[in-house]
Amino acid sequence: MYNRPEQVLEKYELEIKSTSKCREGYLCETNQGPKILKEYLGSRERAAFLMEMLDFLWEHGVNVERIVPTGENEPIALHEEETRYLLTDAIPGAECDTRNRNDMITAVHALAKLHNVAEQYENEVPEFVKTSRDSLLLLYEKHNRELNKVKNYVRNRKKKNDFESLFSGCYGAFMDKAFRVTELLQQTEPQEESFGFCHGEFNQHNVIFSRRGTAIVYFDHFSYHIRVSDLANFIRKMMEKNNWNRELGMALILAYHQERKLSDQEMRYLYIYLAYPEKFWKVANHYYNSHKAWISERNIEKLQKVIAQEESRTQFLESLFSFRVESCILR
Image 1: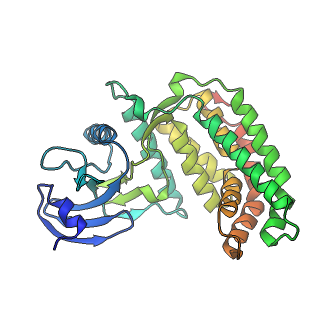
Image 2 (image 1 turned 45 degrees about the vertical axis):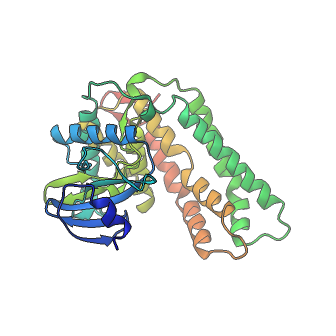
Image 3 (image 1 turned 90 degrees about the horizontal axis):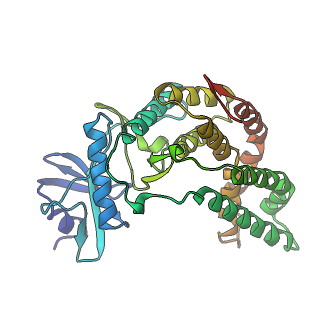
């Protein structure tokens, strides 16, 4: 009796040598190289567009994973008309090392190249990949409400645990920063040139150093959005891993700028993305939505780390606020 991956793989014109479970789904050794079979939650139209875009990027010199079509030239395979699957290239190699400066710089260069090439796409952009112009503002307002819920919950607790005591002591300072960033965003009128195709989840895990060069994978969150959101997401991840090292942060921005010039508004958006206390919200929201019958020491450690890094983060943001990249300056 066939199991599910074997049944799905029958829809492809490939010789399957072996399959094994992996983080993304199933790693498949085939006569056309390694592939990854994974569940897909989007529409057929979105998958078709993503396949087209990845082919476009590949043909214009960007090293990306590609979607393998079925024998009927479909971007997705259905299992008994229910679960949808994508089959993509598996690119062997090492992930970007967050302790290796050269790795991080190279990753940012690769991101800028991806943005440059995607900007050359001339066909119409479908509505289903576009995000609304106020999506970031709506997100931050939602985060603010969620932080307020956590505050109210903790305040009403008669006997606070260690996490809640720690949260209570720093909530005011972090919330003040969240409100100020939200206000700055409200005063920022989005310009069309700030929007473009984005990877959607650009981090160290999705940059692979392979035999064929620096590759970018996992485009499941691909969208048409504020372009520097990719850069901001990567820088925030790297800075959290390196105690918000100011010199590293500036080097990453300049590396991107060398490949793709940052406009005044993009610098402003970059500041807004990095200035919002994202990690504080993430840790607090995770605690609020978790089972609280027992307290995870990991949650306490994460919050302690956020607090410990805040001075370095503030110093970096103060530098970024007045940072000039050639003629570009945040105003």
